Every structure is written in C-alpha cells, then in structure tokens.
Image (cartoon, rainbow over all chains, first blue to last red; front, side, top):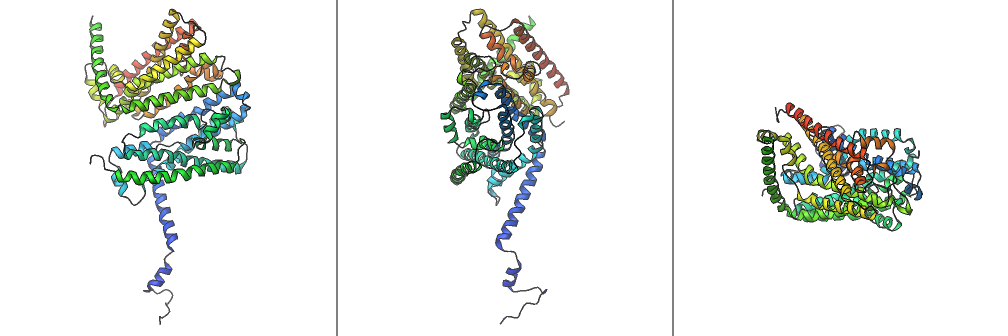
Length: 290
Length: 268
C-alpha cells in the first residue's frame, strides 16, 4: 500500500519524479535546440569578424550578372527559345542560389587537420559534421545582407529580372536551394573525408569545381545545352545545386515535385556514402605529428 | 654600368630562386596529374560554353567561332601565367605581411618588389600556358588569317603588355595587404573578374565594354592581343595597350613605395 503523495510536498517516490520530469524525447529535443543555438550563435559571431572578406566573396559572385549581359545580347539565346526576360530571371535566381550553396568545408577541415585542431574537436560529444554545417549556415546568415544588396543592384539594372510573384513557388525554390546546399555540402564532405588518407585532399576539390562550374547551370541555363549534353548533366547531382532551384524561382517550365524527388534521390546516395567514409576514415585518424 | 651590374645580380639571384623552388615543387608530383586534369577539364568546359553561343550559325559580338577561340586561348595563357607566377608569389606576400616575415625581405640587398613578385614559381601552370598558346595559334590558322612575322611580333608585344597589366593589377591588390592585412580574397575576386576575358569584349553591352577598357582593362589582356594575332588590330588600340601597361606598371611601383612607407611590421 502506498500513501497518496501530497500535492506540493517533495516526493521521494522515484516513479513520481519520473512523471514530473519531461519525457525523454522532449528532453533530447531541448538539448538539441540548446546545442544548435550555441553552435549557430558562436559561429555567427565568428563569421561577423570576417565581414569584409565575405563581402569580397559575395562580390566574386557577380558572375551571373556578367553571363546575363552576354546571353541577353547573344543571338544564340533567342535561337534556343529563351527571351531576354527569361535569361534575366534565371541569372538573378542563379546569383542568389549560388551564394547560398557555396561550400568550403574541405578547406576548413584540411586546416583543422594540419594544425592539429581536430583532436580536441573529435573528443566532444557532438559529431564533427554539425560544427561545419553550423559554420556554413552562420556564414550564409552573414551573407544575407550583401546578397540582398547584389540582387537589388541586379534588379535596378535589369528590372525585367524580378521573378513572377508566386509566393508558393518562391518558397519551394528556397527549400530546393537549401536542398541544393546539402547536396553540395555532402559531395564536398565526401572528398573531405579523403583527408584521412591524404592530407591534401583539397587538390581533388579543384577537380570537383570544374563539373560544378560547367554542369550546374552557372554559365548558361541547361536549356541552351545540346539535348545530349543536357540529358547527361541532368543525370549528375550538379544541376540540383543551381539549375533546378533557379529554374523553380524564375518560373521556368519545371515541376517542383521532380526537383525535390531528384534532390532526395541524391541525398539518399550521399548520406550513406558519407557515413561509410567517415567510419572508415576515423579509424585511420592519427593526430598530426603523431 | 652600375645599372647593368644590378640587373645581372638580380637575374643571377632569380635563377637560384627558381631552381630551388622547382626542386621544392617536384616533391608533389601527383599535383602535376591533378593539375593537368584540371586544366584539360576546365578548357573543355570553356570551349563547350563558348560553343553554346555559336549554335545554328550565330556569332558572338561579330567574332567568328575560330577567332573567339583565339580569345579563349589567350585567356588560358593569362590564367597559366597567373598560376605560374602571380598566385604563388603574391599569395605569399599577403602571408608575409600577416606574420611579419616581410621584414626579412626588406632587409635583403635586392629590390623588394622584384623579390616579392618573382621569388618563386610553380611549374604546374606551364601546361595551361602551353595549351593556351596552342589553342590561340590553332584558332588563328583555322580562321584563315595568315599571320606574317610582323603580326606575330606585334601579338607578342600585345601579350607582353597584357601580362604586365595583369601583373600590375594583381600586385597592387596584393600590396594593399600592407594596409588591410587580409586581402587574400581580393585577389580571388580579381581572378573571377578575369573570367570576363574568356569572351571578346565586343560581346558585352556598351557600358561594360567601357568598364573593361578603362577602369578594369581586361580588354587588353585577351581581346587586343587576339586582334593583333588575327592581323586586324588597330594601331590606336595597340598603342593604348602599351600605354596602359606602362602606366599600370608605374602605378604598381608608386603604390609599393607608398605601402612600404606605411609598413609597420606585424604586431606593431
């Protein structure tokens, strides 16, 4: 027989204590939220220190504006059935998407590895990848005002570039852009994992930038590619990084469902690949100098 | 006489520098393979992107496909020069300012601008230079231009002033690190801007064309040398190219002297 616990009195009954504490799932969610906030907050503060550098990076992203100026005047664009307005909308979207899908984890990881900073980070009870993800997201946050400024300049120069006012589609494009960031991040993270085997994996990254540059749709929308090349490109993960979200935002003839199906397909491949590489790589890890 | 002796001393020192940096670079031979693949891949991508402008018999800014290839070849050449000399040296300059080792450079009995600009070189840019030259010559021959020796000589002068302009722009940007310390990214911005030179300047709208011939003289890096190679450069443009090159070089010299006057070494 157990006496009923009086309300307000501290209970010594373990079962009752269990009841008063929030369920395990809620506790874990709260902990995850605290970690997320701390990571993002500290990384954001870190990134604010490099504001000037980030402005310069953002400036180098003006490439789509130059490509627009080439394509809008080129007769080849009209022959491919795209109007100057479509080019303007596409390249404005490309400018924005590009800024939020840029990934540099391989350089950060390589430096951490070479300088021996990796060991203390590995001891923390937090998978390493989240630290880098947080750094990227924080950097995107610092980029936001500059990207907005560049987009405004683009629209001021080329008013036709304003995307069609379709809030749902724009929202979907934002989501697709974020999906593109994850694909781009995981591709580079897979290369980063090769740092465990070779300290200079960033040289391989240089090879990776080539298909990203030419197949993602940064220099020309895939619609002007010859059909065979376009098909080939659409079977790689690279259009998901830029072309597909940009098409979605600029009102191109593309179904949102297809964009997300494609993105999720690549994620389904990249996530296990990264987990495998991480598991195999971490076993080979020996701190620098050891 | 004194000038000649100084020049000889500088050349002799440079030879030593370059052979030692070659020996150091040869440790990373696998880089050669990666670099070759990267150069071939990006050249193939550039040619493909250029070809998109030429489907169905269209032209880009009044340039035929073959002559546009000459421009692309010269761009590849300039990019190769940047990877061979500019990026290794001027990237180092930014680092030296950051950690204060520029002090030791300034103490050496050699012109400091020569030292920071030519101290080392990277052989991995050479394939790019070679490919660029081949593409430019191929385009010239295919476009039906029969370059006679004077045209070739003029083209060589134009390429030389293009290289000097490129060097001066890059050097001035790197030299600002003495004031701003962190400008590594600024040179990356410059690199992406040089991408403009992949296409003939005439393909851009008038406003940008003006920008690329005056404030950012990218037209002189690729378009003007290409015209010289094709034997259709206007003397006025060639004169302008030489003039801009000398002005840019003089400006880089002045800026460096100004910068050194402001140099206070790291942590002071």
